[in-house]
Image 1: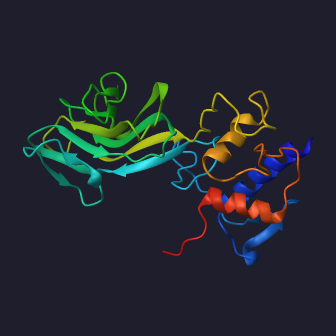
Image 2 (image 1 turned 90 degrees about the vertical axis):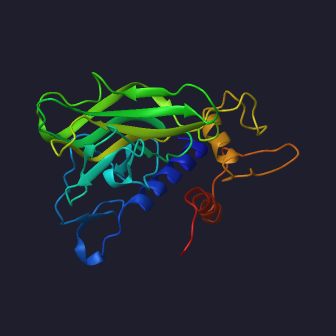
Amino acid sequence: MNKGTALFLGVLITLVFLSLPFQAEAECQQLTDAGVCISAQPEVQTAPGREGIDPLAWGTAGRIYQNIPAVAFAGWNSSTTYNTDGSGSKYRTGGSVWFDAPIHLPSGASVERLIIDMCDTSAMGNVWGWFFDCPTTTGTCDQYGGSGTLTSSGTPGCTYIEYNLPATVTINNLTRMYFVRVRLDAADDTTSFRDFDIGYRLQISPAPATATFSDVPTGHAFFPYIEALYDSGITTGCGVAPLRYCPDAPITRGQMAVFLSKALGLYWLY
């Protein structure tokens, strides 16, 4: 393993460690060789497919979910009337069948899954859901979900409906805007919903056509990752005239502190 590979593995391991929840030393019954505490607390079970529901998740491997509660949804127009069950679920009592809510995802996020926690005991109506991808100026929106994909059928009771997008949608907050929509057919509590989840993964930004650093050409194994560090302001390189990154040079603890502090946005108390 060369020094450049070791550097990036070291940064990744540190990021993973920082994302782990803190546990008091008294709770540790065993330490791994890496010094990680093994807690005596039982593993928390999550709903099917909800691996890693964490709004502050780091890395590109795991799927992250943004949860939009029903209380954040507004009626499509002033004709919509609704009520709640006192525990977060919303149902329609009259007027328009549509409810909309904005979503706020980081630029570059890759949206791949939609889930609605809902109840449907109606013999006549269903619960439906959509994800909308629209231009910030006038134009036609792309929509995902709806009939045959993200909708209840029959009278399944209280459960969840889900839809995996056939192709992921990459969030572009500069020229696009995004929202989700729920449709409740029945004008009573036989169709209701509690929340809408957006499943996405973080991505490394696309590499530029030309190299920023003279010692990291476009064919370099770490080219897209080093360019992403530079574009996000995490690194400015190791030398100028010409601009260099020194990909095979060892990293000091001081340099690592700069990398991690800039990457994680440390440290704010307010």
